[in-house]
Image 1 (cartoon, one colour):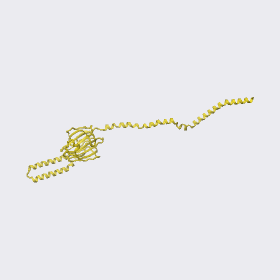
Image 2 (cartoon, one colour; image 1 turned 180 degrees about the vertical axis):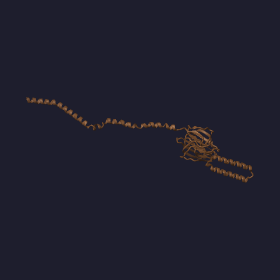
Image 3 (cartoon, rainbow, N blue to C red; image 1 turned 30 degrees about the horizontal axis):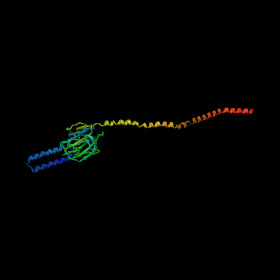
Length: 306
C-alpha cells in the first residue's frame, strides 16, 4: 500500500491546515480543553480520510483478451442498453460504477489495445448518479481497440465533489489491461460502453474492485471473420477461364483461311499433280485425234488411185 502521486499535494495542504488550526487553538485558547479535543479528533479524522482516499494498493492483475476488468473501485449503479453518440455512434451496453469518497480512485484500463479515441470535455458538476452526468458533466472519453478489432469506450465523469479529472493516456498509445489510465479526486463515476451481446457478470448494486473484478466477457468475433474466407477461395479458380475462349477461336480461323503450311510444306506434290493432269489431257487429245487422221489418209489414197 502506497500513496498515489496525485495525493502528494493534497496531503501536504491537509497537514499544513491541521498544523495551523491546532496552533491557533493552542495559542488563543490554551484553557479550552474540550475544544482542543474536538479539534484533535477532527484533525485526525481529516488526515485519515485524505490518506485513505489517495491510497494505491498493490495486487496482481489477471489479464485476458476476452474479459472486461472493472476500471475503478465502487458500486454498480447502471446496466442498460443505450446509444453512444460521441464516437461509436451505435447501440451499446452501458455499465456505470459510482465511486464514493472512501473508495480508491485509481482508474484502470478495462482492456488492452490501442487508444483509438480520446477527448476531454468541460462541463457541469451534477451529482455523479444523475442520469445526465454522463453527457453534461466534466468528463473524458477514451476508446480502446483490442487485437481482435473490438472497441470498448469508457468515460471518467466528475461529480459534485470531484472537481479534477486526471488522465495519463492519449490517442495512439498502446496500453495494457489493468494499467492506470487516470485518477479522479473526491467521488465520481466511470461509464463503460460494451458491444451488444457481451456477457455481463455483475448486477446493479454489486461492490466491485478496480483491476480485480471482471465485469463482463466479450463475444469472440473470430467466427465472423472466418466465414468470409471461403468466398475468396471459390472465386480464385475463375481467373483461368479467359484463355479457354482464345483456344476456341484458333480452329475457326484455320477453317476460314487455309493454313499456309499446306502449300509451303509440300510444293513437289502439288507440281506432280499438275504434271499428271497435263499428261492425261495430252493422251486424251491423241486418242481423239487418231481416227480423224486415219480417215484423212484413206481419202488421200483413194484420190491418188483415181
